[in-house]
Length: 307
Image (cartoon, rainbow, N blue to C red; front, side, top):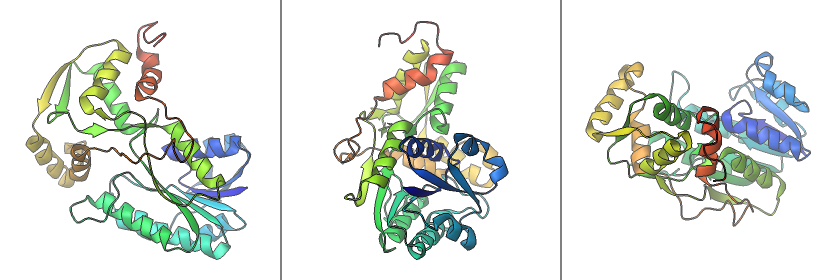
């Protein structure tokens, strides 16, 4: 099967490409600059198409002759012309239109757990919901996947948390730290995408998450255990973080978190409708195992053995 993919150079995209190749598929990837996509070229059997979501000719070339399309492009924060509306809504609509015109029979979309059109939702989640509607109304059989926090070596929030526990004598906790997350391992996500491409009987929108619903404090506990350290923790009032987040809109270097990101963190990110095992047949890896693997290079010898 020939699979056209956007976002192949990203954190999730790289894992999805590798998984598709291992399963014998031909992959064609849209990349801004093929000269800077060396990791994809090194995988072999990946055809590179130069362009972006605004390039109609590139999208036509990407989709020509493809059996399925996987759309992974997304942003977590707006920057300049890269707005949620432009990327998640308009960009998705253009990719769907190109796939439909090329006769692509199957479309797999990466959305996000919590995507919804409610006015009280963040702009990120509203734009993800609008992107979903562009897919559903696109006239192609589709699967829309809503992953929770994706955990792996390239995850910025997880990398930041591990480095904080490694290097900081005091670990700040926003609020009470009891907001719950349900991290899912990157390789499990990649497997779900491959199954979604291959199983033509599947259609619809599915939540994808790991097996563990954990508070932020519990996640820090697991990181400390994996690193064999104990850190003092200090609660940071939500009001103070919110003030810094809003100030950071004007001065981005002032705060590492945006108002939307703070809202999403405090809302939590869990699901009781997890389809990863029941629908896709993937037994998700526990978060503790993932953390031990990621922390192993920095932990004392023997820590985590036999756990």
